[in-house]
Image (cartoon, rainbow, N blue to C red):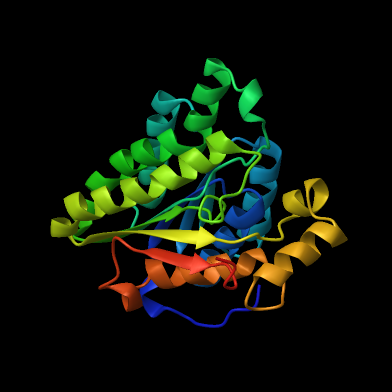
Length: 254
């Protein structure tokens, strides 16, 4: 990632990132590491998580990986406690983890629905609940939830995912109101179609990408580091009066 802006207030700050071992989350971890923040990231993928931790520690980054299945709320809370003991209370929380598996509405069972909600929505609430008390003690904080423009575009083929992502916006605005008196800001970053390795392996074809780029105002594919740059801004003091808002990074596709 090219580092465009240094935010001095992030140097030495403690930042927690969920789903940080790959995809957009990995770029977010790298971005805060480049700011010399203390970064704690959570992921279910032990191998990728340890590899990223080892890579950044070798470069002198104060980083810690917490292996965690975010669907397990008791385990999530325990992982947060351990991360706080290692790095201190978070100044910034990035609720990034999600899984956009495609599925047909006809095939969705109650069990699948509940699992997808747990994967894509529920943990954002409980991660916020776990981290906010430390921010209150600090006197301020920034919580950044990752949404999706898929439901804004009326995308099909993944209705439980889009339901989850739409709900995040309501959660963001409610927490912004409840936590605002403590100077805790809560915002949603809304990515467009981001060219992560997962997307390129599973769904990107020349035809599908061409059709999508025709919808964008800007003609270029969006790489994950563009999301990381917006997240950095919202985590910084430069965004001190930004809360309860959606920040689109979609090249103008809706």
